[in-house]
Length: 201
Ligand code: GAR
Image (cartoon, rainbow, N blue to C red; front, side, top):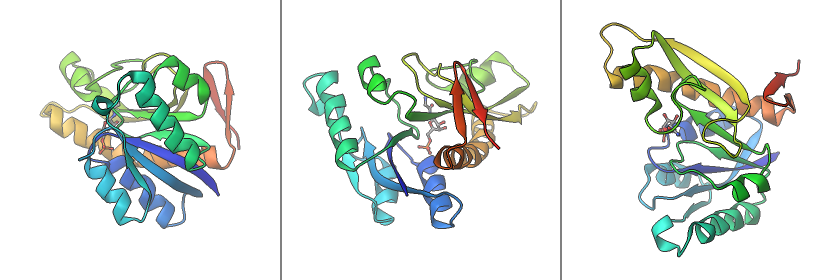
C-alpha cells in the first residue's frame, strides 16, 4: 500500500473525505502521517481519532522557513511517505522543498485554475462574477497553484449565492475530486507530459 503524508492547516474536511474513502475501500492508500502548521487545527483531531500519526510543526517555532520545511521533510521521510497531499495547507512551499518532491505533491484548490490562484479562490470567483467555478486537483510545481492539472469539477454560480453558499457547493465537489485524483495516482494511472496530465485507462 502506498504511503502518503497529508499537510493541513485547519478544519480538515478534505482530509476527512480521504480518510473516509480509504476506510470504505475505494482508495488503496495509507495515510502515514498528518502534519499541521497549526497546533490547534481540527484536522489533527480528525486524524488522531482515526489512529493516524499526527505532527504539529508551527512556523513561529522555527528560526527560518528552511528550518520549518526541514522539519516537515523529516516527518514525511520518517513516516515513509511517497506522496505529499496538500489538503487545505495554507502556506507556499519553497522551490527547494518542491524540487525534493518533484511531481510528488498534490494540492486541491477551490477554483478553476488558472483562474483565481492563491488565497480565497471562492471569494475571488464570487466577486469577479463568473457563472461557473469549481475546484482543481493538481501537481505542485514551483509556482503558486500553477502545476499540471489532474482533474477539475465545475459548479454553477447562482444568482442568489453568497460567498459561503458558493464555497459550500465547491466543497462538496472537492470531497469527490481529491479521493478520485488520489485513486488515479495510487493505481499508476497519471502520466505527466509537460503541462498535461494524461489519465490512462
Ligand atoms: C478547501 O476549500 C481547500 O480547497 C482550500 O482550503 C480549504 C480547506 O478546507 N485550500 C486552499 O485554498 C489552498 N490554497 P478543509 O481544511 O476543510 O479541507
